Amino acid sequence: MATDKSNLQLVVNGILNENPIFRLVLSMCPAVGISTTVMNGFMLGVAVLFVQVFSSCTIAVFKNKIHPRIRIPTYTLTIATWVTVIDLVLAAYLPEAYAKMGIFIKLIVAFAIITMRLEMFACKESVNASFWDGIGMGLGFMVGMMAIGFIRELLGLGTILGYDILGFKPLLFFVLPFAGFFCVGLMMAFFNWIEIVYKRSKQRA
Amino acid sequence: MKDIMTIVFRLTVSCLLAGLVMGTAFIFTSKAKKHNEHVNEQKVMFSLLGYTADQAKPASLALHEVYRYVVTDQQGLSVGYLVPMAGEDKAAYTFVAIGLDGAYLGSYPVALAQEEVSELGPRDQAIAAALGPEKTIRYADETIVVTNNGKRQAYLLPGEFPGFKTFIKVIMAVDQSFTVIGLEIMEHEEDPGLGGEIVQNYFKNQFKGKSFTALKKLGVAKVPLPDDYLKALDADKYGLTAADVAAVQELYQDKDIYALTGATISSRSVTNGVKGIVKKFAYRVSILDKVLAEQQIAVPF
Image 1 (cartoon, rainbow over the protein chains, first blue to last red):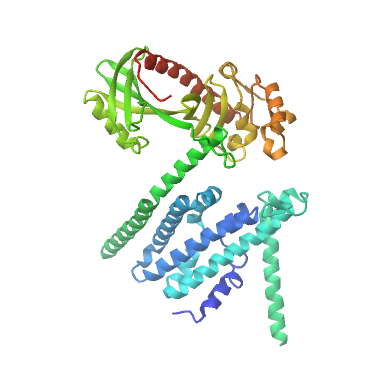
Image 2: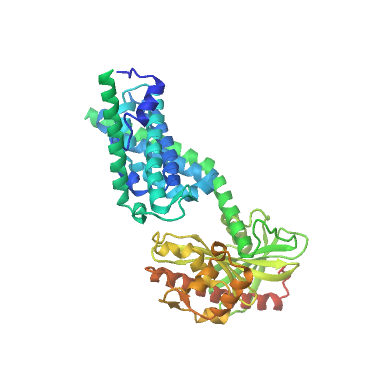
């Protein structure tokens, strides 16, 4: 059962309709825990993008060889392998970036969004479709993380990407862990509102 | 039964494939990673000595590695130092064996190329070959003697000691009279935000300028860090000039280390670790120097 969506639709689908954080509500731990600054969100987003694309492609290639009873161990193994490879490559060739994001990368093994995407999409679809779906999901996660990071960094620290914008710290509580829930909740409401508005405008037309 | 066999077979194959991919990645990246670590270590060493990116090191500056080994044979334990030899021939090394009481036991020329000396495996093999089969050796630590125009300028002491959770790896620079020039934390796994603060300037720079006598009785004080000292310790952040910093540092020369809030154990570990490294090194280097002078072993430092 192949998907009838085009490559571009798959990518947009990951960013908007099925955004991992705001629509699928998966991988909430990093969304709440690590998204204190825009840069953190971006770095983790890039790492997730790579892991998602590689894992989706791997599973799509081997989908007929995977015994249905042991899907989950196989997915976990695949994700862990790619996470390790990316961890090694980054440590070797981008030591500066690795010093900042090294601790996050190992966490990706446990991210729900990647396993879920393998289970829902990659094990049924073609390699090409899985690749674009992986890109969409990775970008969607990155955009979500950066959006939360933007709000928290601006309101909590008064900076964006480390540059002082406001000159003071409006609400320090936004950089504390529980403020992540507020941000995610607000963003989710925003996404739902967009959907409702969009549907209404369609009905009228 | 057939199902079990397929599951076992497929899981084994996937594990093997995963292992193959990870192993290949490791082989391709390990060399670059090692190189990065080496470059980073060199950078840290020169920055500890005061040579940063905008102030290049003079050509007369030279680093000489001395490796300490523990030797076991029928007579019991003894210590050995692998020292480079003076002269044009850069690849000559000598292993100087010294008894625990400081007596000279003998020296053995070691055939080792300059590129190989920093690698643990080839170095151990070369020394073992030079010493003969009845002696077993174990690598202990490394010291780097910094010379400028052939005169000793400072010592770089890489070392590790137990922290709150695991070992903390550091590199220290001390001058000829064992006054601390600088301390850099290379690796640690202390709690972020608490013990992890040992890497911050306002903690590690407190060791800067502590003389050997002050260091010997150095303790940890559980009182807040004074404001002027904090600014002097993090001079770059607060934009203080070198003269201001020196004046404040003079004031706190003989004071104890101010403990990190919520991380007394980490603060104590670092203080005791630093103390231990310098005290042991001062003792060892005096013995080594005496032996080298008595036996007239020509070293380039």
